[in-house]
Length: 273
Image (cartoon, rainbow, N blue to C red; front, side):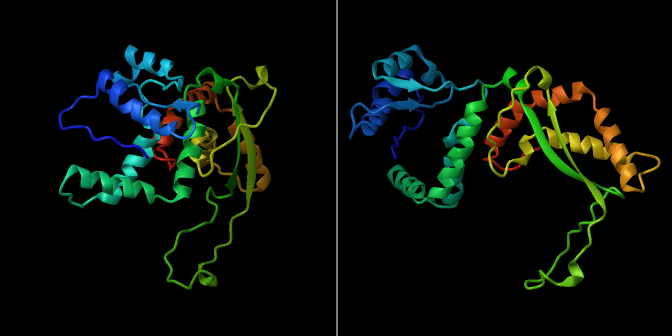
């Protein structure tokens, strides 16, 4: 781990960045192997995109990853390292800047390996697609959802004491329903050479098809005569699916860049979508 103290009221400019900060990082990374390949990811701060910085990185054979504009949260330091360490050090007092740096360094080194792995798994997935725009138009989003007679699947949340997990008093029989599988796309029939898009774990909020299930459920809920049989439910589901405007599908798919950015900002947790 490499860290540098910045004096109070110092502004990070290209001169300091290319003569002090970057040389120390590159020297440390190439200490064992001088020919080591280095790929640098940084945000679009003025010192990072300055001409002098670009020239220095070219001279040092450092490759630079593109960073989309207005997306500071795509940096793992922004959405993972700094918030995580601030929470761990909250409430502590330090007698000197050096003591604070040591505490920061120890906190970083003590982060479990599985947390780092999860951070970079989400970062790699989102980073690879953060610059996508028209590419999302060729993706078909598939999923399945359960629709029940009575518009409720019978599940109920209850409070229970420790040890009561298998108490029959808390068992609820699920209502009769239909499981529906579907897929949505912007122009799927023009791009029907189908491949599988890797999907990050525990991220259901990224898929726009979740909103399609909501729209279908809302339509069924507003029917004057709700279906009373499975056959009637199936028929209404087909009608609900066919009545979803293609414009709404396209709007949902165009929201994917925003979904990606918010997923990163929330460290892979649920988003408002």
